Length: 212
Image 1: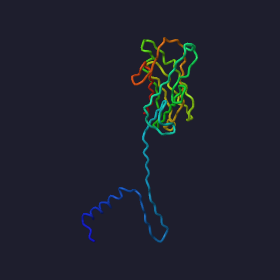
Image 2: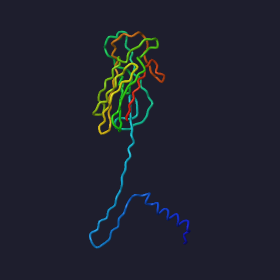
Image 3: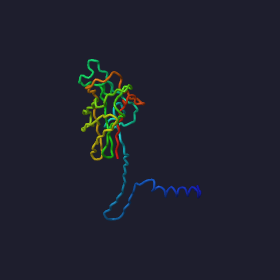
Image 4: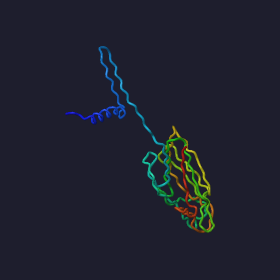
């Protein structure tokens, strides 16, 4: 069977392109004495730069499984009249771990991480009365990583930041963040904060992690 010049051309082009498509190698040696043949394989791995932050309900742990989940938890307190201002710190209600406690995770692979918290002002009840964020304490305890992820303090209408030191350019830290209401003042009656998409009562804290 005769092969057309067009088919011959296609086959020739494919033969020329083959070395570009495959980098494997062969080496054929022949002779009477000792022979040595070598072949080479090149390897390359490309790792993307990434940053993962979780506070509360989320998808992912310090070990992996990172994903975006748009669930915002709310921590609440409702002291009784006998408890108000008595100086006894109160655990909150809510949080993915319960009793006002949240899972907190930061993982990154490009050096030190800056972790910050931002509020727009003190908690308010919409009637001109306020409760300072200094009344809310965050206590970090061990979760799964050797280094406990420290929580930036909460401040009224301000941003506070801390630096997470990388080990070999990797930051992999988590903790359990327990929020308590210090309850050292007697505020006027009302509901303070609330947060939500409209940041009712300046009740939303924004946590931000950043890498170079």
